Length: 152
Image: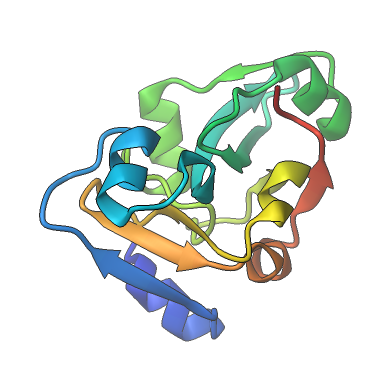
């Protein structure tokens, strides 16, 4: 497994890892624990395109991914959720703790435009009991991400 703390330090990322007392299995649970709207929890969804490319869609916790919109932004015909095994292999993190950055090799990251309404958000921190606090603009900078309307 990749060490997100090492990645943040090595890349000079302006973000903070927050350790919670209990694992957060859902965006709703994390938002309740932090006392913030569920949209302020950024979900990192690992997807596989019909081309074989693995990519990550980041969207607010109160939104659902629009697979057709992700495919349009990614320039492919179709995307679907990656298997748990493939997600772990490509990101270095288990599902439930997948952060929006810090992978062992570069992956294309597509950020839903709705994340920009939040001055900061909380994404997976590499493990279910860790969260990553980061500004959307910093996330775009570090991931060299693509913005698009990919939620509904």
